[in-house]
Length: 485
Image (cartoon, rainbow, N blue to C red; front, side, top):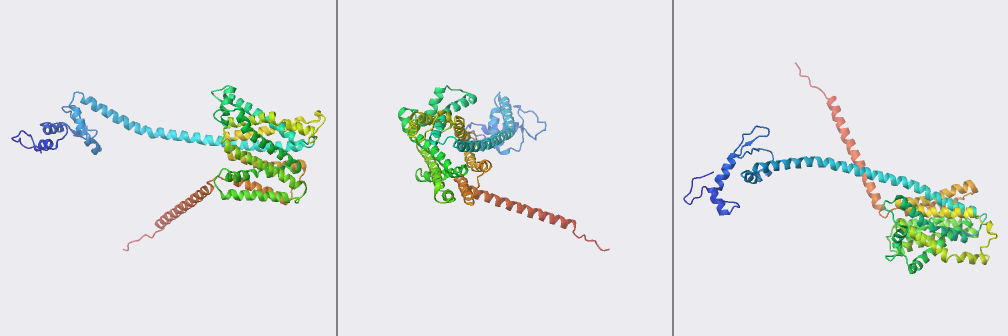
C-alpha cells in the first residue's frame, strides 16, 4: 500500500490521510514505522515454535480476532519500550488469572448456594419441630387450666378471688424472660438496663407514673374482666362448651379490626364470623333459651368479646411488641392488679359476696396450679411467636376444644347432644377459616395453575413417549423388500 515519496516530504498516501484527519499520535513516517513493526511481528498458530523477533514478542493467531485486533496497536507501542516484554507477560498473566478466577467462581457460588439452601431447610425444620412442641404445650396448658378450675370449684367457689390471685402471678413473667436472656444471650445486660430497654413499649421516655396509670389501667381492667367472665362461664357450662365459645374471639377481633382499625375486608372471614355467631346461637339453643345454659353462653361470649377488645386496643395504642416488651407489659399488669385491684376481693369478702371461713379451708394447692398453668399459657403464647409460626399458636388454642372434650368424657361422663356437637364443630371451623392469610385466594389460584401446568407437561411427555415407542415398533416390525431374481 506504500507509495513513492512525494515532493512535500510525505512518505505515503496513508501518512497524508492521517495528517489530514488529525489521527491521534501521528508523526511523520508513522505508517512506514507501523508497517515495519507489523512486519516484525510474526503470527503463528498456537503450539507452533515461533521465531524470535526484533522485540522478542511473538503473537499467536487466536480465535479472539475482534478484541485482540482492537488492542493490537497498544500492545505494539508497549513492545517498543525496553520494558515491553515484561508488560506483555504481565498482561498475559492477568488474563490467565482472570480465566482461572472465572472458572473457580461458579464452583464457589454453587457451594454458597448449597450451604444457604441447607441452612434454610434446617431453620424451617427446626421451626416446624418447635411448632409441634408449642402446639402441644399451648393446648395442654389451656386444657389443664380449664380442668383445674372445674376441680377447684368443688371446694372453693369464688371466681373473682381466683382471678385476682392468678393475675398476680403475671409479675413473674419478666423475671422468667430475664432468666432466659441470661441463659441464651451472648452480651448479657443488667436487670435495670434490660427493664429500661423493654419499657420502650410505652414510648421513648419509658415507663412513667402517668403512662403507668394511663396505659396500664384499661388493659388491666380488660384482662381481669376477661378471666373473671371465663371463670363464671365454667360454673354454668362444661369445659368443652366454654373453650369452644371462647374461640369466637378470633371472629370478634376481625370485626373490631375491620371497623376500628380499617383493616382489609375479607369475605372468607365474614363467613367465619357468621359461622361463629351461628355456633353461639346453637349452643344457647341446646338446652333451651332458659336456665343456666343461656347465662353461661352469655358469660363465655362476653369473655371472648373483652379479649378481642383487649387485642384490638393493644394494636391501636401500643402496636406490635417483641418478647421482652410483652413480658414487661404483662408484668406491669400484674403490679397494677396487686396495687390497685386488691381492694375488690376485700370488699367482696366483707360484703359476704365471696366469703370463706376459715382461711385454712382455701385450697392453695389448686389455686397455685391454676395460676401456674395460666402463667405458663401466657408465656408459651409469647415464646411461640418467637420460635415458630404464629398460626401454630392459634392451632394450639383451638386444639384445646377436643382436649377438653376428651377429659370431660373420661372423667365427668358428659354426654354431648347433637346440637352441642354441631355448634362446637361450626365454631372451630370458623376459627380455622380466620387463620387463612389475606392472599389465600391468589395462593390457591397459583397452586391450581401450577397443578394444571404440571398435568399438561406430563400429558405432553406421555404423548411424546408414545409416539417414540410407536416409531420404534414400526421400524422393528417394518417390511423388508426382497429383490426378485
